[in-house]
Length: 293
Image (tube, rainbow, N blue to C red; front, side):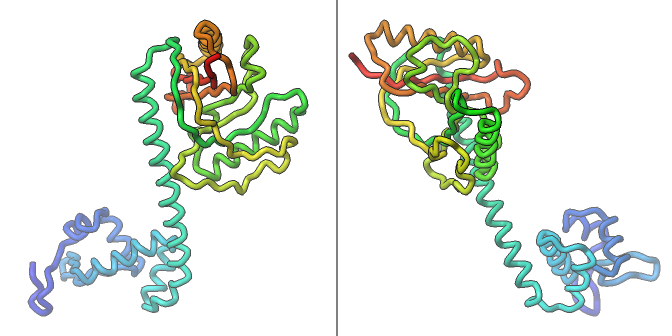
């Protein structure tokens, strides 16, 4: 319908609501509180809107995204002073940048997880192999040491947890561990065998180390590097029994192949990020740094 006086296209309440992607009840509420009035109301009570109201509706949605209440939006639109909103929009700009940063990290995490899961699908379980691997960055904290009291261990894990949260690595919190060379050379018989908890870091991303391990008695950096080297590797299902069997199988393979253990052992969950109910749902890869005799 065309308004004969203004030449504007008139939209019914239903048409305008559909155009805005909202319910008609929302328009009725906006009209009731004086936030968004229709362009015309006929004698029989029909409401009609135009592109003028569409512009106002767009302003309302932007201000809602900026965190304003409907009453605050109404007051601002009554003043029509855009400069009064400069501090608010500056704050909104910062929030949007933080969200973009967060989603970039999440996208990288999903991409890495998918790549690891594709690799895990193609590898048989309990089949040892030797691979040359590039260096990679890790976030790691030492947790298994008789020198640590329960309170100190709890504090260290808490700082590590805050580091992970601060860097948007919620799903990756307990995805890896390190066994020191002097321990992997001995038989491992129980579940308390990891000297470090660790996470692989994306080389393309910067990480905030504001949560340094100031209370760590070892004064170690949380970000370390797994060296480029030759590794004996094995894949296995999750769960303690299967993991201990895989480590034992890999130790035997290293000895049979005439290899020497020259570095630490790294254990990573490949597809266990969302295996919340059962650790046996995940796939692990174990890597021990070796060289030929």
